[in-house]
Image 1 (cartoon, rainbow, N blue to C red):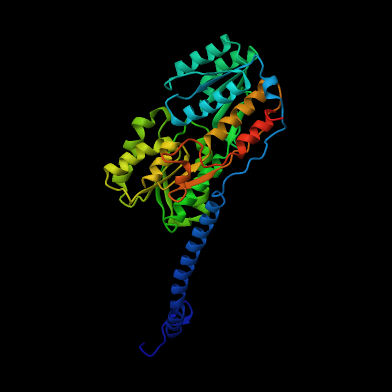
Image 2 (image 1 turned 60 degrees about the vertical axis):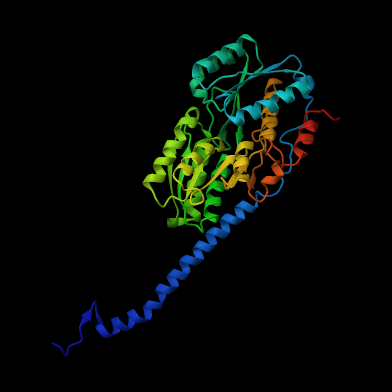
Length: 382
């Protein structure tokens, strides 16, 4: 028995040992291959980020028209999801400024995020014979009876800052101002990949009451799946828009406690970031757990300047406000609005946040080409 060569699946034991010895270096090759894939993923993420570091150019989204003439005697009523979010204040301020410049009435319906207040706003707009009602980040489904009543009265109803490009809209509104939310999600993931050497253990705080959230989430998932493989993980937790002030901090705190390896928090909209920061600070994880986000509101850029937030994807809310009112004026004038207003994205981080001012100011640092561009579009300098 000892003199016989032991067979393993038809191979002599000696040959098996030789093969094992020859195969051993391939383990080293696998490690090298894994490192190469990681480097490729990081390089890819860095390349995506680089695309959004230049000052955006303005491209007219539609044909010019005489906006002052088109809006004579018309009224636009804006009903935001809540008047207490920094972004809604900036957007409506821009729109009110454009309306004043063009000489038509623009009404901001103040509310604290309660559905009964939205209903009251709809009734007011109908009583005032508004030309357009802008539902700013409000789910249209929550106001369908009021929308039907408004449209029956000849009022155009628009959903704005609620859904992303390519997302299906409900049939009972007259239009929607869409943003590149899918790209936002990808960039939020890319930043985390690039700044952890593609080893991300993240918590993403989302708001499923906003249709835009699904596009952002899809973007995050897609980028991690295709460009971080099994080295990145992300958990999603939902906090409704009107509950951010009280709901974000405890869910982030719970995640930090349950997962000691958590190294990234992605509050997908920057109005959440101050509450996520409070949880990180309380857990004494400052510097260990980083954040990136989206919107580019001044207070969040201020957090970047203080080193409390790594990155914010700016959308230039002044530009977006002009695009929203451009869309709505065209609807009021019975024109066909563009399907895409062409809103750009811009990366803010510690290296360029000084360009937003000290302290940061709304929409500063994006250049001024869009201002003169919209003026030409509306026939204001001809």
